[in-house]
Length: 122
Image 1 (cartoon, helix red, strand yellow):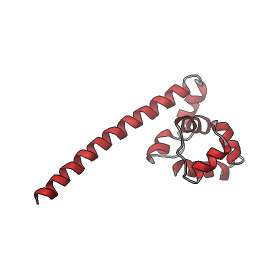
Image 2: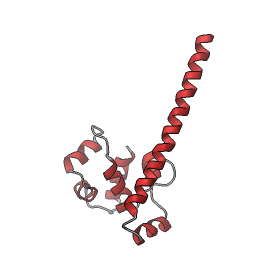
Image 3: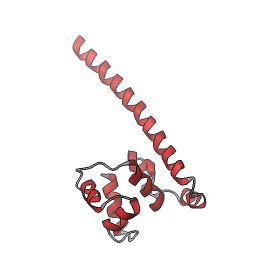
């Protein structure tokens, strides 16, 4: 959903002309862009990485909804100064977020299990 919102924002703020242009920049087909927009397909890692790198969208916000949609000026300038390191930095950020989410999931599963046991024991 945030991915589709981002695409709409990019178009309405004239950062891109249309979904076709965004699809080309992200390295996906226009048909896949349509499927993602209609929530019939999931966004892959490469388009997520590319939207973060090419448009200055916050990876944290895109994946978790936390923080601001746009990266701060400082972090985008740092990305522009070292373009060869940007994909690795973005990938490392995504990996870190995934690890944090896995820990959250494990914690929540444990909490659910504990609550189920309490209900069973009355």
